[in-house]
Image (cartoon, rainbow, N blue to C red; front, side, top):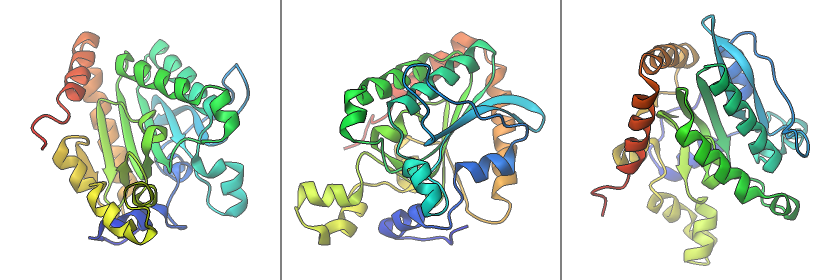
Length: 261
């Protein structure tokens, strides 16, 4: 795993680094009996989304992960983790299955953003993301989202409306990339480092804002620590009445931004 870093831009680079574990690595290390499911029942399969039922310490759950791939061929096959509408609709289908079968939902987020090609827009990229947001907000089962690398814009947010949102210490989460921010605000790529600092995209920043609840150090034993925390949290959330679970989730998002100037 990556060493501890201080500069926001260094965190961005760490989140994008070639040797960083992807969603598949987390699934293989923490879960058993994973069965990937495919297709959105409307258009086709999107391999940027790796999802299906699995078991965590013997207990069933549903996992949805954004998979970047590990080498050039694999990255191309997974579209570098940038999902298209069918990927988000596959996610939506499995979210609803999790609710139907009373399975906790685990989302693993690692994407620079949703795919922004013409075809994706023609097939309703914005609508697909919006449907995920509204569905997650009212999903009648516990939801935990973990940002394991990049959390870029709506592409990440589509899997990050949850009862608990956690981040690895070198993950980042932002409305736009530092490069995009520098291009829009200053029209100067030399301002990328400054943009990364201004975006307040580090795990510590986001915990301070109340966007996330927990940061996991990237050190030996990470997978076991995260798996244990997930088991404990899902058990805690599962004891709540559905109405109380949804009310707490609603209030969590209603209070975001309060007092920030």
